[in-house]
Amino acid sequence: MHFDHLNSNEDGGLMSIEDLRALRLRKKKIESNKKARKYILEINQRYRKMSATKSNNFLRNMNPFKKAA
Image (cartoon, rainbow, N blue to C red; front, side, top):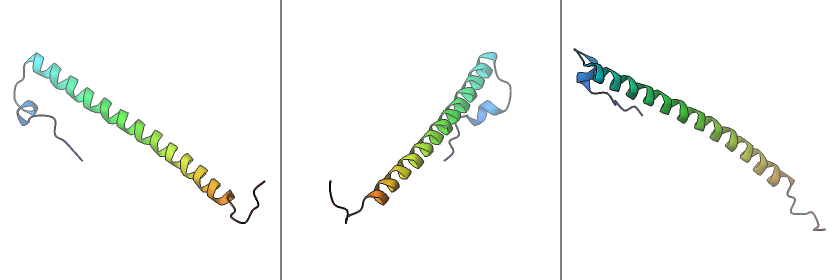
């Protein structure tokens, strides 16, 4: 999924200092958002892995033929 946040007229031609600053800030914001999403994805993957392991261990340890204490 790729969104083009930059207008085509911003990449070429002469730009004012304000336009250049705005473009640079927009690019920084896009990059920081990408890093944040990647970090959150990694955390979610680690959590899913831990959660799946706990679930598997619970089901493995559950024995329907074992007497209740």
